[in-house]
Length: 219
Image (cartoon, rainbow, N blue to C red; front, side):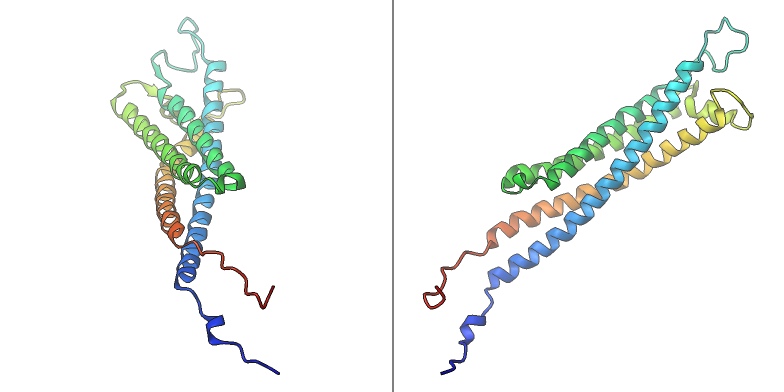
């Protein structure tokens, strides 16, 4: 004989519903955070590559003032470019740590470590981006001597067949600068997403559904 299912079998636990809602928001924020972290990683690699190459070209083509045809001025400030190398290296490292631990399933069971790394990595990246760009503009504003960008862009119109190729160096320096500026809001949004995600994960832990014992009729 057919027995109609009891309505109680289809009741939805409010705790389960709240938990699922939190999990949906967490997955969305995690996707946003990971996407922005990948963007920060690619930007950091680009900044590091262009800035490091510019320093390498300078070291290869810089000669002392004893030479009559020196390509670079004697008074020269490399600190802004060095700051970009250091800052981008930190951002790359922080982004890699964040991405690796986001995919490490073993850490998902260790809530404290997973949550801490979710927040700490973008925080380090944001601080590095902010300090790097602040130092860059601070030196440019206070320094009375040329920087790698100012000197290369001043002579970028000269057609050169050998290094240092001032036009190329100028474009590389500008690319690194623009990406450094963009990284500040990118890292800030990533940090905000990580903070909200961390808060939701803490709230969701309160509503973790309990495993109900199976019905004897179904065993």
